[in-house]
Amino acid sequence: MSRKLIIAMAILSFAFAGTTFAAVENIKVSGDINTEAVTRDLSFGNSGSTSTNDEQYLFSQIRVKLDADLTEGVSAVISLLNERIWGEEANDNVDGNTELALDLAYVELQEFLYEPLTLVVGRQNLRFGNALIIGDPDTNRYASDKVFGEIRDLSLRKSFDAVRGILDFAPWTIDVIYAKVEENALHSNDDVTVIGANAAYDWSSYNGVTEAYFYSVDNSPRPTTASTADSKDKVYVLGSRAHADLNDNLTLGLEGAYQFGDYRVVDASNHRHLNAFAVQAMAEYRLLDAKNTKLGMNYTYLSGDNDNGDGPDISDDAYNGWNPLFEDQSPGEVINILFDNTNMQYWQLSASTMPQEDITLGINYIYARLAQDNKGDTIDDGNSGGKINVNRDDKEIGHEIDLYGVYDYTEDVQLKLTGGWLIPGNLFADSNDNVGYSLRAGMNVNF
Image 1 (cartoon, rainbow, N blue to C red):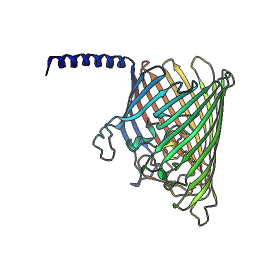
Image 2 (cartoon, one colour):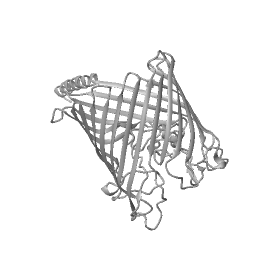
Image 3 (cartoon, rainbow, N blue to C red):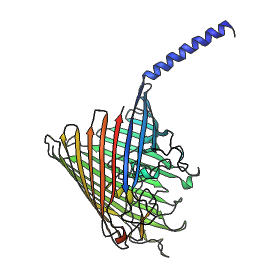
Image 4 (tube, rainbow, N blue to C red):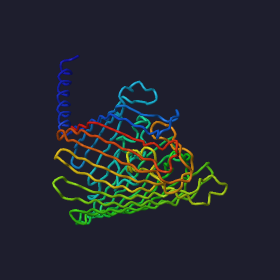
């Protein structure tokens, strides 16, 4: 190799090294590590082998995030995530459970072609309002197949493959989204696709906001009891939300949404018109005392269908069951494991206080009922894949009490305890009317 070539390679190496170093200076590295020990019994007294009793395990969730500021108005974000149960590295049923999966990967272009427009392209979090419609691509109850079934309700995977345009016409902000939730067989007939818009108006007083939204979902997802979607399966959602601090003490919020379109039932040739709705009302009262005490109330109604949908002439009948779509809500620790966010109404009362500056204690009480009578003899017991015996034509799910405590060990480290107990109502058969519970203890570290 000639001396000139060696010198040229050395010069290029230093040049590339300088360029790489300059880029690294613009990258911020952050992340968190969450570790929890869990014990759960969701068999509700079932002594049979179809339901798992007394699950006990430890799991961890690790995220590493890179934020890069590039040229003016251009930035990129990459986040990697690993969720696994300790000691399960050799589990053949979960692909890549010891690997870091792609959680976020998007580019943000500010003032893209037009000053008020910001364009975000790639895998990103989408969450609007209280996440009644958009918040989690597989809902708060489920998760990717790469996540162990036992922790699917606790998964941190919330990202969508999407294009999002944000128009800032203060006090108006308009979000327009296109998301590909499922590609499946690489042709359009079986994709799950979301197109929609969310318009928000900032009151500039009372910390108030009013939102209106419309979403169109092709081949919409639904509870697991329903059949696979097809090209005629479409759900349209029209809704509105308002939220405001009436004074320093009191916050009120209200949201309502209506679903229409076509819903596929038992077989590919049988569709029903969708006619469903949801209503949520909330209130929070702050005592403004030294312990930062808060009281809360929430009421939610999610419509259900009063027909099994398997009759000979049902294609002309409306289907009234609310489709959970991409919700990211939890009525209660245990109820969220057992029931999809549909055909339900629940009342929730909450309270929290800080007896010390670094300790937060809280309690949630939930009373839940089905919106329409139950049609089956069993329900899934959640993450273990077993069955719980229930009564037909009964609505009362029961009473749940959730307790939690958080200790801020340092500004970067939190220790936490969470417990949920469901006292079964009349929906549960006599053979399955024991208390079900979920207990978790963990540590979270941010860096």
